Length: 487
Ligand code: NAP
Image (tube, rainbow, N blue to C red; front, side):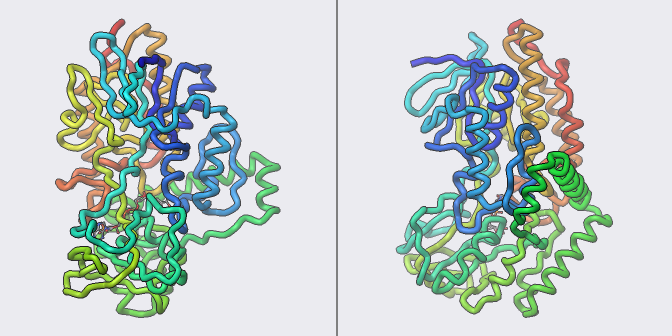
């Protein structure tokens, strides 16, 4: 069976839904969203582990268009974010455009017809002029390549695939990992388990969160006065965008201030010098994602929680064996081990002009002009694509700049009566050279390992600058940067 749309969007998470809403607002109706799961929400649907929340302030963690949510906390938890995403989809009547349970197996550019042919795993073919990928960077769980995982006799779970009915009461639980997911999970389950062992491979920089519920008066005041809401959002925006300076590899005031806040925080929250030293990072601030939490260190100090920083050798039927030979017997292993982030293909096989696979074009790791377009893959626009992740702010602002850019491109296609635009290889190469040079001066290129970079040290996930820098870079759709096809 074949169907045709002007635009296919893959993924009904926040980016895909915002793109759809903006297309609709622009009067476009010939589009469809293909969503492999049975419901919308992307990462906020998938990450339901106890304590899951956003480490960007709620009032910053939303789109700049349309109604602003009535957030209940300074930092919203996952259920509230997902609920607001559902309300957003309802408000823009987006459900009618979404095909749920439709996994994209392959998307190929057809040179002859100059359109995308999207093949779904249920055997259908959907043709579209424009392909927008909105599968995010953090959707394919990684289990950390730990040997013996399958041999474990107890229960294994990944934070991003949390079973609804998992009961940890009375269980000996291991949490592997100490990243953004772990620092939220650990305080939420500590005290519920018989014992909790946290396996840390690398310590992280932690900043205080100062989360709190907003009282009814504050919420009412924000509801009643949109200007006040905008002011709050703008001040948070400016404050956080200023943090980008702290991510420079060379020392500067902003970075020194952050390092001091983190060191003081560790000092004040962890009186035990031995534990404190285990928790002190030995790499540059910002090299790995800086974590924002008030209750992680206190959770580690509980009598029923241990921190193990010995390397994991393997998983065995009875538990986790560390390199010192000790077997840590547990009933449940939680893999808070993050995601496979270096592919940025959402698990979809993509083929461009002349049948060239995207993975060949990306032999040296993912790269895209402004994080969105790749030479040889006409009319493919990636939302939250390569080098558009941030270490300091809400990525939704990056996505909104991308949506604006895509809308300009689509408008230019119409004006030019063209079939497609293909980014010129020399434009992409020069762009990439520039941002890689800029990235080499950021903490992301520092001495740690992280999900931001390949084994050769090339940073493929992160943007080197501030959001304002990205807004500037994306503000115009420059036709000359593209080869125009089918005019
Ligand atoms: P992550 O930051 O990649 O952390 C994975 C953890 O697992 C790290 O501590 C890592 O250690 C450890 N690990 C991996 N393989 C291991 C192994 N073989 N042995 C021992 N430890 C191992 O993953 P995440 O915590 O799921 O977070 C991923 C990203 O999701 C974050 O950076 C953030 O962008 C996003 N996130 C955001 C929020 C939010 O509040 N907005 C919340 C959760 C997640 P190493 O550090 O040594 O590699």
